[in-house]
Amino acid sequence: MKKETTFIPDDRPRCRWCQGGNQRYMDYHDHEWGMPVHDDRQLFELLLLESFQAGLSWACVLNKRDAFRLAFDGFDYRKIAQYPEARIEALSQNTAIIRNRLKIRAAITNARVFMQIQAQAGSFDHYIWQFTNGATIRETGLTTSALSDRISADLYRRGMRFVGSTIIYSYLQAIGIINSHEPGCYLYPGPCTCHHL
Image (cartoon, rainbow, N blue to C red; front, side):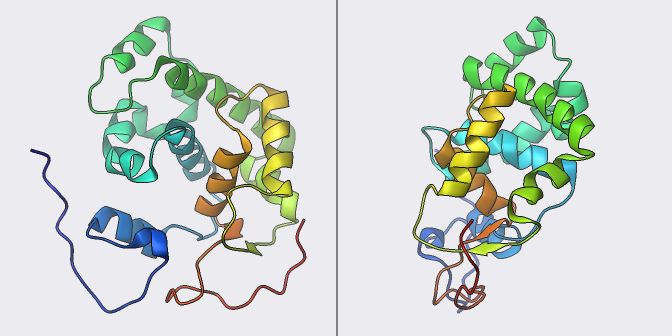
């Protein structure tokens, strides 16, 4: 039987998706989700994890995050970009992670494109945040938007895979370009006064 993470209750109201007794989920909501990320390694980590989420729940991916970190060299995109076929085979046999060969191959391809973007833009941080001119958008209740459509299309054009608009929207929420904390959540930043991009 799978051992559940101990839930430490408190009185703080949270977003509807973060209800229940998963402490890892709660910590992610409280300390990461919607917080602006500007470090390229962290930006790649979340991009890799989001790509593995396709067709699955975020809880499934988050519960395997430590195993992913170990399996993928601490999310070092420079190393991942160089993975040979033998490493792909080993990862596809690793029961601690999501063993989808297409997603594993996409992680390698995406690491290579990630570095190409860095070379062109100076950093992936500069590339991804320029879509909003460095601003955070506040919106709730969506799974895609014109912004995620635009970024998804650009990443596909550059050669990335598993970066559809829904995945990218979730990624933008994860890295704080979109803040989707709901009214009633203790982290809700207040009514949106921004213009949608």
